[in-house]
Length: 328
Image (cartoon, rainbow, N blue to C red; front, top):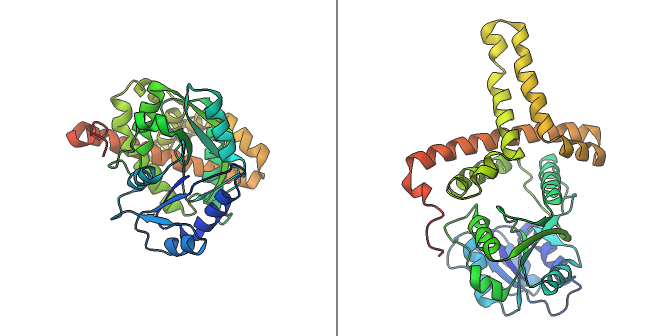
């Protein structure tokens, strides 16, 4: 069990308690602290968990790579330190890997309910990602959920390491290397409760940054057509067009032009209608309406991130080569 950590002391204890409660025997815990400035090390030490430390704050990829160097098991289970696993998560992942040698990695899903229910932003983020992973279950390509992922050590020797320069998209190139050689399975049989972002500012900043830095990965690979034609891209485009046409009635003075942003918003809702039905069926109507509003804001942020990313891709050679660099 390789757990990278940076300043998650407030939830690290819950993560480690869940690891210790696993039904799978002989579980090794390799906790790698990436120079946290909070009480993370003290929390782990108080629980009797040894802590490895990176020489300087280098990002999650650096921490995971250091963990791999010290791990001794036949399966590497990478777990983010803000996730509390279900008791059978490791056992389920190991069983799936053992059952089929064609499987090179098993990725887990988040529970629908956050680990600590402290904000509506966290409720939205957690439920959205739960749903998105739920509908994507089975063999996956083009993206790699990395918060809960088990990989045989022998497979990792072929496809690793994590690329140190990628601090917000480290799963992109690893996922490509994995799926070129093996099946990668996403399943809710391996699951955990996630302590997602509680602040709107932090959540939107991550969405913007992760969208922007994925642009050169997708534009230079065979996934480009699929990404451009995906429902996610369609929703972001519809949200951006809705927002862009909102001033039209005021600029033209023609009331009937208000139908344009309305029709665009209806088309935006239509893209993710199955998700909205899921949310309305599983939560209160008030929260579901909040979810719709939040998702619209997130899609606007994705559109902004993609726009900036494309501009960088057109003007910066180093940005275009972000995923060409040798793994470090």
